[in-house]
Amino acid sequence: MSQTHDPSPILQTAFAFWNAKVLLTAVELGLFTKLDDQGMTGAQLGAALGLHPRGTSDFFDALVAMKFLDRDGNGPDALYSNTPAGAMYLVQTSPRYVGGILEMLNTRLFKFWHDLPEALRTGEPQNEIKHTGTAMFEELYSDPARLEQFMGAMTGLSRLNFEAFAEKFDFPRFQPLGDVGGATGLLSMEVARRHKHIRCISFDLPVVEPIARKSIAAAGLSDRVTTASGDFFNDPLPKADLITMGMILHDWNLEKKRHLIRAAYDALPPGGALVVIEALIDDARRENVFGLLMSLNMLIEFGDAFDYSAADFRNWCGEVGFKRFEVLPLAGPSSAAIAYK
Image 1 (cartoon, helix red, strand yellow):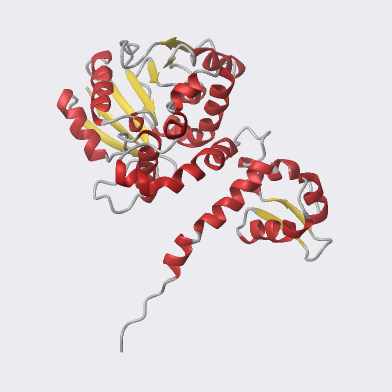
Image 2 (cartoon, one colour):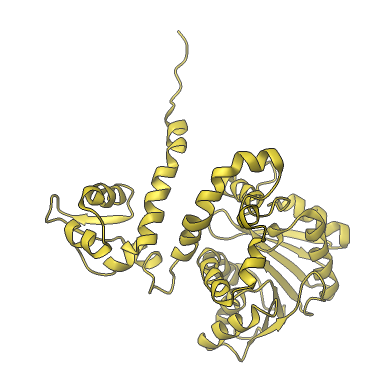
C-alpha cells in the first residue's frame, strides 16, 4: 500500500495570500485604530469603516479566527475588540506601531510580487522602475513628504531588531557609534536610550538628514545623537569605533556590498567593529525562510541586490582585512553579523 502524505502544508502555503490580504486590508482601512481600546458590534464597526454589510461578518470573524481580533459573544450583539498584540502593534497612535510596513506591503509589494515569475526569468526588478522608468529610491528622494512616510514605514520593521541589538551587544568599549544609512536615526536613538555614555552619529543622504534631526529632537536625544550627511558610495564614512548598517547591505549588488565593507574598514580604528543587521540566511540555506524570501524581494525591488549568510559576510570582510567575526541573534529571523578590525 502506497504511503499517504499530508497535503495541508502545500495548501496552507498556496492559500496564504488570502490571510495576508485580509490582515493588510484591515490595516489599510484603519480597523485596529478605529477600535483602539473600545468594543464595537459588527454593524457599528462596519459603519465606522464605510463597509457594505455583505462582507463585514466574514471579514471581522476571519480576523478573529486568525487571532488578530477578539470577540466577546456571538451573533449581532457580539463586541469586537483588539487583541493585546493588535493594540500594541496595529493601532496608529501606539509608539510600537508596525502598520506602516504593512501599508507598504499592501500598496506596493503585493502587486509587484505578482511578477515574480518574470523577475526569475529576467533578473530584472519589477517595482516602479518597470512601470515608470524611475527607480524606487529616486522617486522617494524627489518627494520629501513621501520619503518621510517611507522612513516611518520602515521604522516599524526595524524597531524590534534595533532594540534587541541595543540590549544584547557589548557596547562599553566602543565610542562613538556611526550608523550608516541611518534614516530616521532610530538605531542610534535606541542605543543612546540604553547606553548613556555613547555618542552616536546617524549618517545618510542630505535629503534624509532633516527627517533624522526632527526625530532625534522629538526623542530628546539631540545632545548625544547627531547627524551627518553624504553619499556612502562617494564620501568617506564618519570615523567611529563602531559602524552599524541596519538593513542596508542587502539593498546592493556584490560590488557595492564590497565597497561599503571596505569603506567601513577604512573608517574604523584597530579593534573597531562593523555590525550589519539583516535577516541573515542560514549558512546551509535550509532554515531561514524569511531571509530567503527577503532576498527574492530584493530581486523584485532592485534586480541584482540580494540577502546573504553570515558565511558570505565573513568572506567579504576577510577580503579587506577584518580578523574576527561573530553572529548575535536578534528578533525573529534577524541577526547582527559582527566583523572586528
